[in-house]
Amino acid sequence: MPSARADAAPLLALLLLIQSCMPSPQPPSSADPSSAAQPAAPAEHTQVPVRQVQINGRPLPAAELAALEQQYQVQIRDGAYWYDPACGAWGIMGSHALGVIQPGLRIGGPLDPGCSQGNTGVFINGRHLNQMDVQILQTITPVYQGRWWLDAAGNFGTEGNPYPIGNLAVMARQRQGGSYYAKDGTYFGSDGNFSYFSFRNSDGSSGGVTILDGQVVY
Image (cartoon, rainbow, N blue to C red):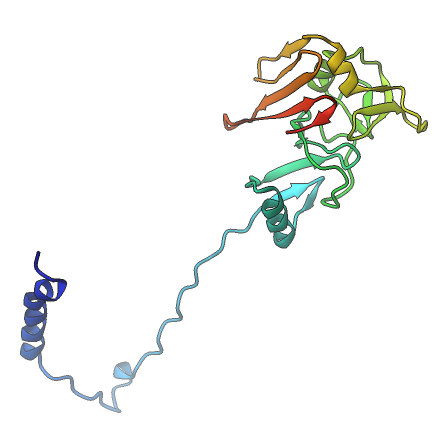
């Protein structure tokens, strides 16, 4: 195979020939202002895309977003999300819960009661649950209107009373095979010890949360 230098020789010779046939450049006349040297155009800088991620209505700073993606080894899509720091539940603004992450993260603003467009009269940690939230919970336990608290271990109780009255993880184990499937691709199933909650995003991708012996194992 010929070398790159040998391949470039004919092209170099052609360029030298063209250059030799061109007239020598004449210095510009001082009387002709149009021939004055023009300033070089400024170099173009590559624009870095600005990320647009909001948590509870507050934009997430780029450094904080990068730290979260590095910590959890995930790519957070641009969008508006809600996050419940008390139990770790999260979802897209206007939607039901889509998953559970570490609770207590100091990100975003305060949780908006209307972030899921709830209309059921059921509140958990201040968030007004929508119909899909309630239907998923009903696969584990009867759901009553009122104001409730829920922690990351699954303990729950009435708002204003710190003593738990039940544990969703334990109830899921006791369901012995209860399951629920919705048209939007949301699914919840349990065999008593192993529980799984899955969901489908608007772009077709899916995710889920796994609970084994009362512990969230993702």
